[in-house]
Length: 231
Ligand code: HEC
Ligand code: HEC
Ligand code: HEC
Ligand code: HEC
Ligand code: HEC
Ligand code: HEC
Image (cartoon, rainbow, N blue to C red; front, side, top):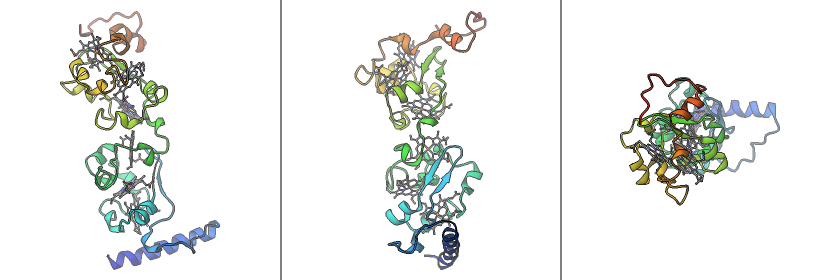
């Protein structure tokens, strides 16, 4: 362990406890642990782009991690600093960066599971508007609201590895077809006649078609002139 770091930390912790004692009735004296190995007591809370809470206690005290497993290579000791880089995203974590260097399913639970353990209001993060794909055929609709609220699915039922959290991603894959659905991929993971209605039934429930798409875009009655809508 780096002696300089511990000394610097001692000062910060001291400043922290002075702050606490002058501001609130918080008792830290009888803490059943070595305070040097604890880190800041108050959780780190990031508000943007989403609300995420990080607890030093569960990482240092409970999981037994040393300060230098995160500082300063993954994070510097300044609340909010990482947000200013704009690089802390779910995609970066999936690549093993930041929280994802441990939250990879080996050292700790993977960052594309147990969403609610890091996010306070996870349902509020789902897009309100329906997602519509226009390739290879126009137009297939997907509603978060129905799936998350009405059918009570957890985000990680789909945002494990089934779908990326970026609309238009699946559309770019050559195998985003009915055959893939019949093989149990994409929507077919559930739309198999067991978990949800089968993909070879009720075509119009998913396929709202060119007319449905126009209606949704507020172009009802407008001519689909120049539209290259697939047939
Ligand atoms: C699992 C990762 C991890 C470990 C282990 C860890 N920290 Fe942190 N620490 C963080 C993160 C994340 C932040 C917030 C950084 C940011 O917002 O950019 C932070 C911030 C801090 C801050 C700044 C707090 C503030 O309010 O500005 C201090 C001080 C700190 N850590 C001390 C420690 C000490 C001391 C230890 C060991 C006892 C420790 N940390 C262990 C992840 C960790
Ligand atoms: C290990 C903690 C952790 C877990 C688990 C986690 N997230 Fe995140 N998430 C973060 C952090 C950190 C950020 C970026 C900082 C912020 O938004 O305050 C973030 C950002 C996001 C964002 C903003 C845009 C983006 O892609 O970065 C969305 C949306 C999101 N998470 C959804 C989810 C969903 C859905 C799940 C579960 C499938 C999940 N998160 C699981 C920590 C986590
Ligand atoms: C150095 C490794 C490491 C890093 C980096 C790390 N974690 Fe963890 N985290 C762990 C371990 C180990 C556990 C406990 C084992 C488990 O729950 O899988 C844990 C548990 C958790 C938990 C569950 C316990 C609790 O606090 O409620 C949350 C939430 C969490 N981490 C969020 C985060 C977030 C957010 C980040 C990024 C700011 C992060 N972790 C970075 C190793 C790490
Ligand atoms: C039944 C499957 C399913 C569930 C459950 C689900 N999603 Fe999604 N989500 C999708 C699909 C499909 C896309 C679009 C992916 C694509 O176009 O490749 C998507 C895209 C997203 C996007 C990107 C939106 C954009 O504008 O780029 C976010 C953010 C998101 N989901 C968050 C969530 C959150 C948060 C939850 C849980 C509350 C959740 N999702 C639950 C299937 C699901
Ligand atoms: C994690 C499981 C799961 C996945 C993946 C999934 N669905 Fe669903 N879906 C359901 C369930 C459960 C229902 C409700 C039960 C039923 O109607 O059979 C449902 C219902 C629907 C409905 C009718 C209700 C509504 O929201 O309009 C449509 C349309 C639909 N899904 C489209 C899709 C599309 C398109 C995809 C792929 C992008 C998809 N679903 C992926 C589980 C899933
Ligand atoms: C659970 C939702 C769902 C149901 C039900 C569904 N589809 Fe699809 N379909 C999709 C998705 C998603 C795509 C790929 C995205 C796109 O083409 O916009 C697709 C693509 C297609 C395509 C173009 C790609 C290919 O495989 O040739 C055709 C044709 C098609 N569907 C026909 C049908 C017919 C016919 C039915 C009813 C027997 C049906 N679909 C039922 C979701 C569904």
